Image (cartoon, rainbow, N blue to C red; front, side):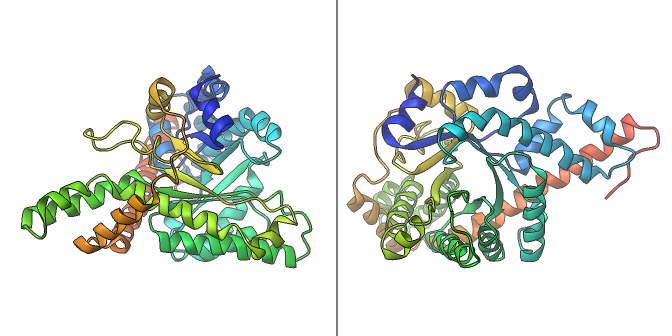
Length: 379
């Protein structure tokens, strides 16, 4: 048994891997990680860009596609092949958990982040193309993404809601899930257990932005220097723990009981962006502090290795609520607007994924020209 196994067995948290690469699918690396306790995989446009640009294992399939596919269509064929293979590797976990775990996630195109109708169409298309029942389509929790999330749940489709940065938006996401399940049931569904969802609450990026704002306040002499400095590195975990409080409240009571009677599963909070960006902080600052039942932590491989080596398996996500509330109150008193922080991070996240996608399309277009004298259709 590994620490990852104990995380799930003793504390009810599922450790997922925030990375997907074809060479890991082919050389047994992902299978080995699953054997060591990884229970799911997440991906995003940046992850796929790094994977496809960084190795030649995609070249054979890509070469077979160019000439009769657009570069973007070829990209999706590459992605779907990886998702299908990962879902096969995770199928035993999915079966053993009776459909509660063992998922792999694939994200809609980042250009759709502010397009509700386009997101709905794309999410449907991905669900129809992937083979396994253990695939979650990722939809960003933008203002335009939330109604698309609700529509997908209404249709009984499993969704990973990504890019959540604020408690207010998280509340909207929970409502989309609950009302979507209610609509699905009202449409005639009598068993809701086939619908799975996670709500991906981004963590470390919050500290990066809040710390930057606190440093600005300190430099300006706007407040007590020591008090402001003491708040650094505290916002992300405090907000995530408050999100867990909201989760426990919303997934209880008469409304939820009516859905659980039909087999509904909770929409688990998923802690994303859990690698430590500031070297002054612990390498497990966003893992050891957010452990608790009915949660997921998706970690890049370096963070997985760190947890296997020296992680602490203990329930921490709801520890010391007084301190959590004090941190959030202190930030508000200092003038740090977490709503504005969330807006900034959401915009940056959408832009970053879009930039990765666009750069990859250009790289693939160049590769297509090199592999095929006639070039590849563009689109």
